[in-house]
Image (cartoon, rainbow, N blue to C red):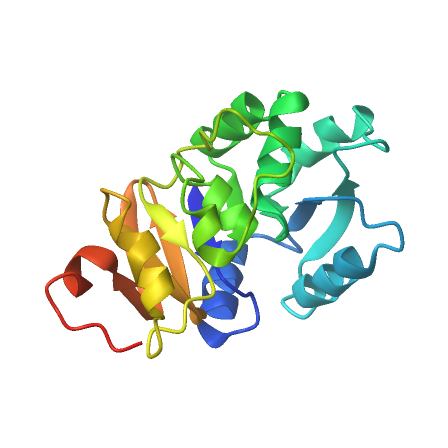
Length: 215
């Protein structure tokens, strides 16, 4: 099992860590869960090209809302890697819960499957998406239970400019009584058999709380 959390997939740390999942595999199969409807498959096709550049094949697309195809779930869970896309974290988690997919995804990972989460998808890998408002997400869908997959035992915030944390963002961070991983777009977190590895530019909130904030 390997769980990878990314702000953005297009950095060398992300590519290196995802490429490592292909060891001993001939053309690994990847499945994609869309965070919201993608009628023209624009984001899906971009992700297909991304994996194709690493000699992986993305050929399973699962949408959770009106065009949900329960028949695709079996193919999804047979893939070598499942990709959780970026988007509206609250909406994404809401529909994963509506489709009762969290237990299946947990079991998939525990049994050795790999999951790559990007932005919203990365936060869903955490115990809770309580940090989603820190990157601008609004709970407009009325999600009442923010419990995530819990496969990564950390709270995660993507897209953080670590050299320019605003006073407003800092105020929000200090209101959360937990240590939070603040991740830049140039970073990757890999959890492999309960061991966590951090690459690129990131910062733990607790390590900043005693320092001076420059906003």
